Amino acid sequence: MSGTSTERQAGGVTGFTDNPVNAAMARVLDDVRREDHPGAVADYIPQLATADPEAFGVASVSVHGHSYGAGDYRVPFTIQSMSKPFVYALALEALGVEAVCARIGVEPSGEAFNGISFDPSGRPENPLINAGAIVSTSLIPGVDGAERFATIRDGLSRFAGRELELDEAVYRSESETGFRNLALAALARSTDALRVPIEDALDPYFRQCSLLVDAHDVAVMGGTLANGGVNPVTGERVVSTAVAQHVLSVMTGCGMYDRSGAWMVSVGIPAKSGVGGGIVAATPGEYGICVFSPPLDEAGNSSRGVAVLQRMSSEFGLHLLSRSMNPVSAVAAVTTDPATGHVVLRLRGEVDFVAVEEVVHEALSLGHAQSGSTIVLDLTDVTRISTVSAYLLNQLASDVGYGVRVIVQDPSSLCAARP
Ligand code: GLU
Image (cartoon, rainbow, N blue to C red; front, top):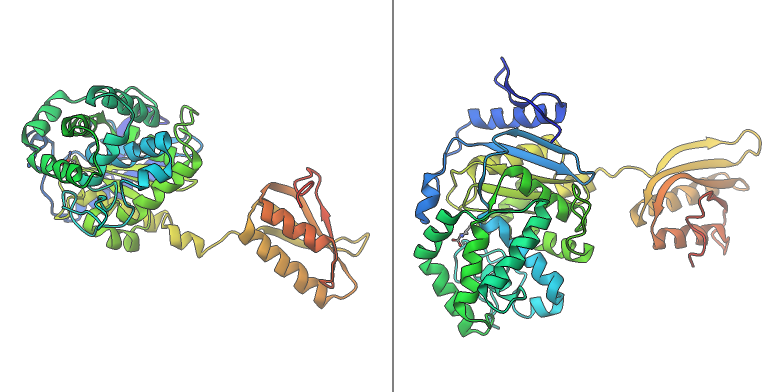
């Protein structure tokens, strides 16, 4: 972690004070703590009822591996349903998209976490409700439940970047009282979505839900999805980029149970909650975030957790769609070269299709407005260029009738050998 000391400051801000990012997250916690967010600690699993309702923390990890935290982000709790997207990712990685999607859908169910949600073909609606999660667990390779759980624990540990331990008391409590999950597993068995003995899916499912984590661990796990499947702290590739993108897509539509639509509007970050009081969120290419506060709202999501992520989304500008409405321009500067009279567009950063479309538009408008002049596209500060972008720039420079003279200055040969 980047922090080394916890302080309660005179202004009431609690958290690590050696980094302004920690202070900003601590401010969010303190603002939310002052507000009224009614909720109750889950008690349908008896052991969960012993959680401290005042525990409250947030952690985030950037795709560059920078860790931040405030409040109780080192307090252990059980991962519960936050395990679901990660086990689903492991199933996708092991079996491929087609085989997994033949058994579990990707549609929002609009129902509670323990809803009886199966589509007409008998598949659970998605992997983030219990019925679908139990099937995901059953798809993890293994001859029995014990072997399956060993693979799951290993995989989730690689997502977290450390060996995760089982909370035996929660596991026992959950398996002694999980009759509804037993019923859901039996239903999945009846539709053929579940094809292993019920115990060999249910027991590892109860165990995966009972793995102990803290908010920082889960932020690393979310950060691994945000980073395209590579753990940003250990550098290990845990799943492929395609799998990470698939899982984040499902989290976007289905992660917050029957509040998934409202969540997308007010927070707009792929996420998954758990009845232990955690919410994991991942902003693609940026951060993994985890908030922890045990009291839950009526939909089973951490009340303060939802409020923290709403605030972080708006104050830190993390809503997926708000950011696409404020794109960063790829054109850093437009100048005229005094020696040649050429108009120079200096490009920067990653030039994807959206960026190059802007550049093409700019070059054509300038070229047509100042007919006879030459437009230079300077790629010196460009770090990466997509195939379609290279194609468009090469097209522009090839002068096949666009009516402008364009030179691409490409010192790193980013566009070279691209058709
Ligand atoms: N282990 C819990 C259950 O299956 C997970 C539910 C949740 O976190 O939403 O009941």
